[in-house]
Length: 452
Ligand code: XIL
Image (cartoon, rainbow, N blue to C red):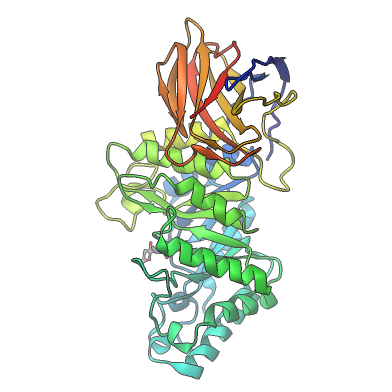
């Protein structure tokens, strides 16, 4: 479903000499705010999914929430190796099939999780090694991907093959011991079996730029260079009580390799920042056009594998938590459309301001009765920028209530926004974006941009 944004028009633009230069403001008329995660994500061409299990399908209160909120399903366990091939060569697809049927009947897509992984292997595979294991593993990929051919949006072809810690290398496992090329062999077999599915590499502790995510980055770059079929990287995002400030940058660097990125198993340990971390993850995905969807790893806190951490969007009674509202608000604030989605292009109109000094800023407003979200694009001039500050005049009766990808000083009147630690550096001619939400009518005057 796509709900077009309406009523864009440029308000004004101006220029000022020197390092402080002017900007134009575009105002977007009121768009209907979506009231479910799936509908809101769909406005930018993305899916919003949930991990579930076939045994839940008969739980009516549970399923009413799933059907209302989500546009994608993934099997929390039902498509893993131990579930689908409990005895060698004997495949059981019943539970996975039931999930796929439910998704299809309700207009949802399906993520396939997962073809090969060191964990949740059937006992017979755990006992194999060498050529026997390699042959069995590739046969597993081929059989399962063939069975679900045409029905899977994205497959986690390989899960968790990299080591934690500083090595940036592979995790030891029976699969790894069959040879370093086991991952590419799996991707090639998956492509041959289901050419229509996006093929993903999926892992955890990759929630920022670190040794592990850099090791995966190098593998994906190598696969792209050598023509090994890979289409996406899954960031599981099982998060604690803080978010790595390079979270968005990490998504962006994978996207820049020419693969999609998906947030595949999102859950966040409950604490004072749970809602804001969920919102920041959502905004980071929305900020990268090739971040094409988000999946939460379970519905209610009581369903979570992280017992006692209450890391999900609904409480045990199925009530929406503050984290839910934070995600929905972030989704409704929008972001660039995914490539190939119907339209919903970034809400930028009018001509770019001439950049005579260090940087320029342009504000785009998405307004509703009583509030607004402002998206600010900061563009570097002919020289690279190292640190920036944008000044905005927020009129009387309006106040900034939250800011992302920048830090504000003041909430009304003259408000300045300083770059975050990870987005102060902008290459010559490049840009970055930050945003803020406020009450009232929003800024009407020209923003300024200064470097340094
Ligand atoms: C977990 C499930 O949620 C549990 O029900 C199961 O007992 C163990 O696996 N990374 C993954 C998921 O890729 O498959 C895991 O799911 C959580 C960590």
